[in-house]
Length: 382
Length: 80
Image 1 (cartoon, helix red, strand yellow):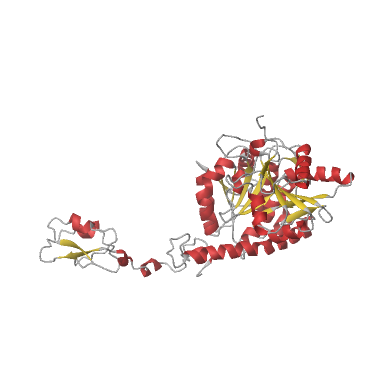
Image 2 (cartoon, helix red, strand yellow):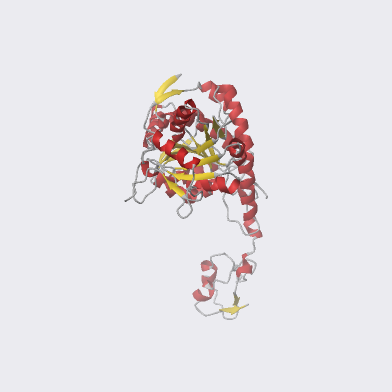
């Protein structure tokens, strides 16, 4: 059934159909409507879950870890400062191998305080052991939540997932979304079966202190699980396509096959880039887009396969690791031998127009310095 | 690794970690001086002193609280 809704609405509809038993959420702009929709579902009795009104995001993720440790499916959602406040427990959730799914409305971090979009918040949590999937539109937000549970709960993975949607651009704009039938979701996503959980009949300790004899192996296991998650994601994408007819992957290649210049980006900006690619293709220019969907695990093989034939690539970052540059740019440079230029744009909600994308393509075609951090849309003093 | 997520499936297994190895100062109790008040037993944070005033050196970390609380100075702390 097609309904018109925002990405926040789509995430909430997906969560409802995945039937989590515990939902601890603290509202924060621009995630707030997720917390409201889910509260309404629970109050109306259409979602049988414990909705916990926690006093902070640190508590929200802590309650989610506790609930997941008790062996049930859980969901939480946040944004920006809220995700930063969760930082400590994000490591705990991953280390305890709790398959929590979190909806993140991507927003800039303070200071200066901004409620507008960039991707600094989730990018800054890249080392926590969470998988991160960046949606381009509301339909993907819905599809990724349903798939994230299946990926996270796979016994080969058992790592939490973040479904990232660009604040305002996706969270507060509406578009048609195909809502699946509950019976199809039930068929695709079986009930969560934990391998270890708190049970008085079978007592065990979760999240314990470890001495130097054990810690490194626990971290090694997480890296192994993260690597193995790529194949699980591919399998789950295929199963999803069989049931729902929509195809997803670790990356999306858009007109890359014969492209001389390929742009690499994540999230909603890719909609704008596709429009520009179509426009330039009509004029005979060989340009393409490689969209990174899974930022963690990082699909370096898929990225390289898609961009290796290009003369030059441009990597677009709505984030900056101060002192080195865009994170996606630097990770691509670290993992593969490509001629790449890095661009920082859209920080704190700075508008990105098709003209900016054309400017990036021009600068990539004739680069002055490849290691330079290129700022797009920056107001520079004369 | 023993289990995914470092889960400990064997309840009570913390006793395998003999924390007495952390000790720098070792308490010795002089039963001649002891007046059987029970303060050291009550104050020991590790429960390492028995009702017969014997000290369990497998788990005594040498914190010295027993010596501090003893009203007749029957417990001496000595560097090991």
